[in-house]
Length: 433
Image (cartoon, rainbow, N blue to C red):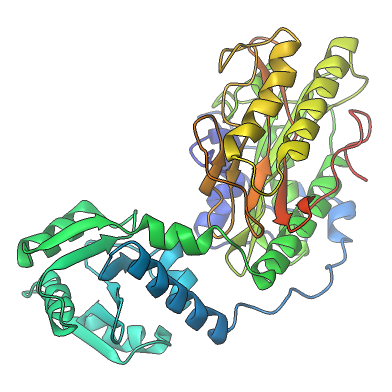
């Protein structure tokens, strides 16, 4: 699960990434955790410095593939009676155009009409940079600081012959932009563009799956190297820094969440500073990006000799993960996968439903350019599973006051059924193949 960036336990690793810094070959910078004393500079262990880069990353997404995505979007627009789609900076913009653009109060975006040339809106002083990045479309309209970008969008739509009709907004377009466009073109009906964007992005191409495979390979290699650095008394930050250093050694940027002991029962971690003790459950989670495509893996094990209780819960968790995988067949509703994993856990006396102790969240999420994207293994989601879809498989068993166990591997759907990107953890004593 990639929803833990607010957790202080991984603040050190994330902070370095946020400002674009990478650890040196010898050290990883100190951090502050939960308002406590900063860890001292610690050397990157030899086991991480000696990691060999994996095979070269697969080729990036080609221009031809992005052009095909735009055409598929237009087909879906026709099916859903949407005349144009507007999106601003984010993963959907990158998906269709290859353009990375950060969000600010200044509107930058693209209009993809069902018929006609795509068009861009950019702040005037950003035009030169925009033209460096834009690969598709020559209609680039600029607005000055005392002008309305929303009028430009309305003009683009009008110029495409859309006097009335439906304009779809990508789901993360901010309200002030959608509202501003509506004010300039009140005759147009605003609607969600999700049937178009999700309709394209849910089904991954072989090129996308290859990039995700590479991201998963890097993540599991870094986790394995990081696990070998466990020692009595180490902080979460130290382990997180070791794993992030391994990501970099293997040629990728990423983030990681680390929890010890009873705090592993918190699905998104705890802000409480933690240090490792003999017998603690250790949970590491998250992953890296390769050409924008993400991995998401969780491993839970024990530092030292596991108790019988820890073994029993770990084996139950693995059984639930197996049940979800077995259920994830082509044509099956997504909710059936959640039900299969949840049944294993509730039959063992936990729950029911989302109650703790038990499985407090859905069994899995879609994954691709976003760590969490369409669609989800959750009750009520009747979307049929299709080849090309990618998901996490991560039932959790959370027992507050004791520990939690989550095993997470991502999978993609082939014509023959599900296939994991990574080998599952074989046992509590052997987390890596």
